[in-house]
Amino acid sequence: MIDVYSKALDKYTKVNRVIGRVEGLQPGPTVVFFAGIHGNETSGVFAIKSCLQSLTKDHVRGVVYGISGNLRALKKHQRYINEDLNRLWTKPHIDIIKSKTVLNPDEAELLELLEVLNDILKNEVAPFYFIDLHTTSSRTLPFITINDALINRKFSQEFPVPIVLGIEEYLSGPLLSYINELGYVSLGFESGQHDELNAITYHEAFVYLSLKKSGVLDEQSSLDFSYYHNLLFLATSGSKAVFEVVYLHSLKNEDAFSMLNGFDSFQPIKKGIPLAIHNNKELKAPTTGSIFMPLYQKRGSEGFFIIKPIKPFFLRLSALLRKVRFDGVLVLLPGVSWANKKEGILQVNLNIAHFFAKSFFHLLGYRSRHITETHLRLNNRERVAKSKLYKKEAWY
Image 1 (spheres, rainbow, N blue to C red):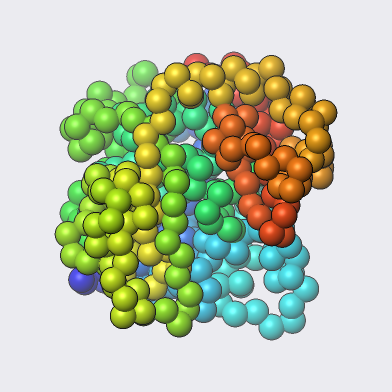
Image 2: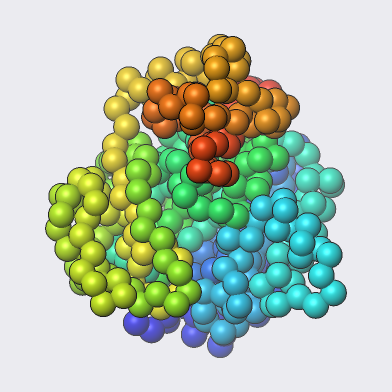
């Protein structure tokens, strides 16, 4: 498929790192929009540019930024050059990149973006909101992805679109995970398929609603916020369901992978149905759920995800357990210890604490990764979240 937006971007638009900055006449939060972290996802760049040009200082409280992601990949209209820029944002990986004398293009992009990010955090005023705009290679209704912290949940629930949480357990190094570890509200918004005409429209709607919900735009603005709300509401048929990622089919660089035609994100699937051809073998669904972000492009290390809805009762229970910091009791149990209490990192010896289910840790805000065959490392977003910064916000 031809990315018509990429061609237009190249022909009519000079893409700068900072797409724009608007500072209002009144103090307020700092909202930062990223777009084009993947170079074949260009609709967010257009949307940010259009929205920022329409803002007037009179109706803005605080500061709004628009930031372009992978400039080199945007110019070539491809996902990345050497490495996926949205998989490099871990502290160890960043330290390695900083120590290099020769960088590949995507590593250079990371350091340039990191400098911009650090400058914003140093020079602007909290509370901070970070929003990353994306599109997908498959057809999809608009949706939000978040790392599972309560501040992210609460802010995301202000929008009339589905929410998918827990993806950070399956991906290493997204930009938003790095920012979330700093404690700030951060979410991703996927507006649709790469070359859909509505992708820009839905991105614009989300940008305007984000500015309204964060308190940047006041009621006197000439923008019709109900129009943008209804636009997304109709696009998702009013769905505000919350889903959790339960499975990822990972790919290696040398793998031959092809999704079977006809799968859309959020499409229900049953265990055992054929989904793809992987290394010349038919691949069947390992579990019942809904397909999520099936890969219909040449580049990418995630073949597809499977998600399942979370019942509201468990969302309320997890919020309660986190507020009382129930996880502090866990270290009294055999096989569970703090790896880093300040950063909210637990270590679990599976030979001793094998009775714990992953879903129990999810209730408390922990997402797990195997560090050895016998040990889990669990990260908790709540213990690093700067929730106090947001307590006076209208949505909190």
